[in-house]
Length: 307
Image (cartoon, rainbow, N blue to C red):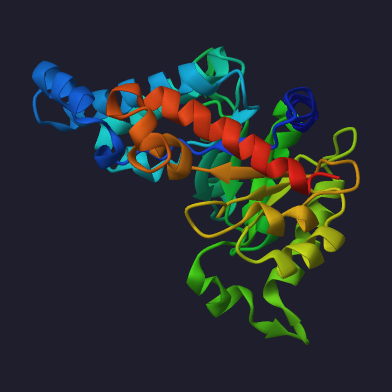
């Protein structure tokens, strides 16, 4: 799957992943009203509004981008109906030819990690049959529990030719409380980066590993160091746009081949219709068109950082 991701990025000239992280407040009122008329002001009604919102955005951007990243918490908040929409969203995006990175941040030990890996990347046996529960192509994984929390994911990645993105240096303001702590004179995120590189050696594609890393756009100097620590690791870069990351800061995340990183934007794209310059041009009734233009603008913005 990592080979397919690099091929799609090269073909589209777009190292962009759209974060499908819908809050109900992002959904235009007309969609909300239609969903509530059909299902009431219920969890089912909220989930239907989210589904119609997602579907429109995907229909309007799928030909421009290689991948999407649905954040599972935005669906879990609506309970079982929300998780069904998460599953439908994953399936619909794959039908459109998109690579799906499930932002699930799972990580535990032993059989629990194995169950997470099976549920999101692998197949579960049900009687005489096997079923793929969510069937994402990649997922995000928390490494805090160490190697025995990661190894079950590695095994499924090898079997399914899928991948993971391991949290290394996240974009949130308080990430340094733990991630920047010095251990034997070096910050923890460097030690995690080295471990990611070592895990990745077990699962190599043609040029990059199935084991990627999450490194926030808000810390470019740290990104530069981690790029050196993890030369064959694909980096998923959150924090662009709404969280303050700028295109000019992202060059260190890419390798000399112009690859090695994919940059995420979530509300900057899916809620583009609410902010200028898109609000006055498109409005809520054309929110999908606003998202498409935001993607085109992001692709253009990122041209300056690819070598």
